[in-house]
Length: 126
Image (cartoon, rainbow, N blue to C red; front, side):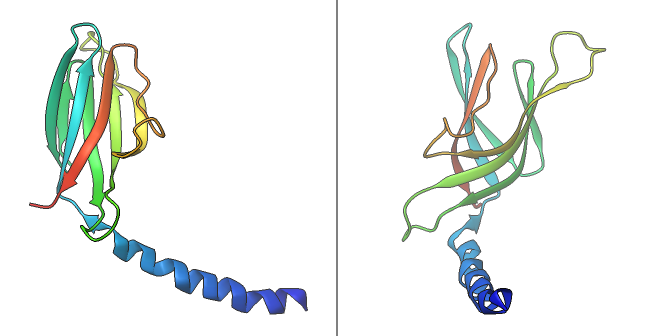
């Protein structure tokens, strides 16, 4: 009986939550900032969705990139897969990060690597 009373509340919550996806626009390019902690070299990298780029021994693939429209508070998010290839060409790449990064709060979901730091700067639609 109680479950029957909660069902309309659950359905209403699902219906109200679904327009949230309209608050995000799909990007085609992610702009990343990469830091080599040994040399203090900072690079700005641009990656198309689905392509892989290299920084040092890291391979970075951007699977998805989204940003908020101008009338909403600014935020960019990208789903990244980062592997460390190391210096041995015969070794298998070691996954070091697989998840979402956010431009406004990079510490929420950060790459933890002893030599490299990668953060999301923005997502753009070409």
